[in-house]
Structure formats: C-alpha cells, structure tokens
Image (cartoon, rainbow, N blue to C red; front, top):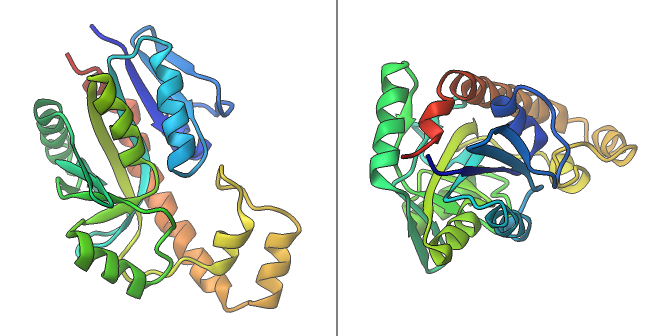
Length: 236
C-alpha cells in the first residue's frame, strides 16, 4: 500500500484526524502509510508543505480541513469531496475512484456531501457579496486557500490527489474583521490586538460566535470522518 500525505492548514483541523494536537511543520505519522502535516494557511505554505511530504515518499496527497460555502444550499458540517479544484485559470482533478469511494461512505454515514467544484482564493471572501461574486465567476460550491496549491504539487509529481473539506461558514455569513486582521496563520488569536479589536467593534461579537459555531460543526464532521474511516484515505 502506498504512503498518503495529508496537509492541514490548522492544528485544529489536523487533530480531527490524528486524535491529538501536533506541532506545525513536523510530519506526524499516524501509521507507516499515513502521515499528516500542519502548514499554516495560504497557498505558499501549503505548496511548501506538499513538497516537503514528497521527501517522505508519499504517493498521494490529501488537502484536509474546512472551507467556506459559496453555494447557499451548503451548511456548516456538510462535506466536500470535489471532482475539480480550481484557481485562476488552473484546473485540477481529484482521483475519480478514490473520490467516489469517499463520497459513497459519506452518504452511507448520513453526511450531507457534495462533489461540486472547490475554488482556491488568495484571500478569504469576507462577505456574502464576495462569496456570491466568486460563485458567479467560478461556479464553485466552496472555497479555501490551499487545495489548488497542493493539487499542483501532486500534478507535477504525477501522484494521486484528493481534497476533503467540511463547511465552516455558509454563503451568507461574513467573516469578522477581527479574525481577518488579528489571527495568525494557525488560526490562533493574536493578543492583545484581537481583544482590542472586539472592544472597538463589539458588533463583531455576534458574527464571531456564529463563525465559531460553524467551525465547531465542521470539526465535528471531520472528527467523525477522521476517526471512523482512516482506511479510506489509504487509496490503493
């Protein structure tokens, strides 16, 4: 069985698969054939992480974590196993047999799951208007900031690729400014700036609570998937 490398931007995402917190930038072996790497957010970090995993002889790469909904029918906790990942003019396909196997398992396990297109954005779409614009431009159902970069590394390395994402915020939820400005690349609040930001704009607290609830639903879906179906990540 070939080795699979899983890339998560955030420690909280990776923990859903590993069952524990793991340090960033250090590959963590769940088994000899499955390892996980936390890279931090953004395409550059994800790309560098994917290249790093090639040194460990992985033959498949997985983009794992949360995503924002662009399709209004998607809700927090829904899962995405896309047929296609896009960024700008680039298009990447996931492995169809692997994707179908995951999709079938998710449906049988009573998850709401979509195989719609996943877009990678350079910046987080921070409002319903921004999400609707990206939806109209790409046709994608969800968005993250890493999946296409990982897919590109898999493509030029001629290895298999899959993306598994859980929706953390729906298409009409705005991302609070305090999150955009005062969290680090691992999703942790930068103090005291984060607190001061909320004190200056207390109206963001309601948005922050809604975002936290959505992230919790996404993590619960990933946790269930990660703890019950690890073998499905081991394609071939």
